Image (cartoon, rainbow, N blue to C red; front, top):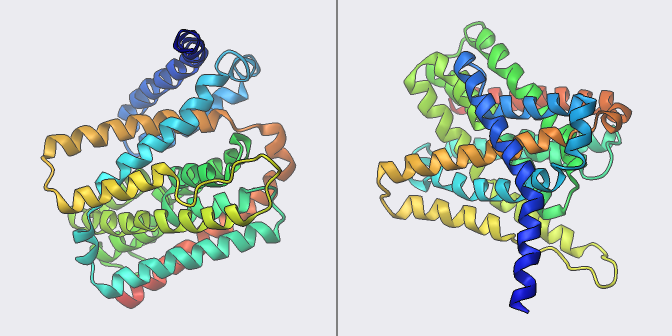
Length: 339
């Protein structure tokens, strides 16, 4: 039995290797572009590069053929490992340091933007799991949250494409639009950091936007942002409970209430809170997490099927822009009340 299993496993990894190498090479290219364009986050460049590769017919054929197994592995497995390591960025001590007003207002922003975006997706009749995935990405932490939720509800890679594209587009717009509104809205440096942390989707996009207001604003933005990330686990767990209650075909396996990678995320967060980890360990974990998420986001970008996106593209785009305005408005209200 062991002799039979070994060749089978070897064959699986041989089929995955080309796609994994492609994703790794794409991260290197994106890293070089990031050095030239430091204002654009690495993860944003990876998604964009994946979408661009999918636009080339000759490359598209290989993405659906030779690279398909490795691309699917990167989009799912590497994403989940990266999400576990993301938990090491978050300490509950930092969250408590925000104060109850800021903490509760951040929770309110997440819940209201999640519910509002999901309702918009349903109103515009977006297909499948797209309303849920868009709501998760915009409300919590961008593409990594979309990957986490997709793992729980077992969404197809094609269902993740439009939400990933939208959260990338709107998060990139925020890098350029929010600084323009900073002084006209009468925000101090720290209030601007609070607004960015509460209203921008991806951690990299938050850093790119908030750093313009200085180190203090960046620190506030990151703590507020990571407080939103804290809500990933309970929201995904609730989705897991709902998914388990759905009717499933005979013989099908129900999804777990709390997936293993979500439990790993919570465990990593508790480790960071309780154990004083050495800075080199945190730096190494952050680097590995960035590379894994970058490979996964390139793979998800490459999974965007423009033919399918074209049938719902205008509706998805309207939902994305309305959701962007909704969360920016809610975040500004939170800053006005508790800034």
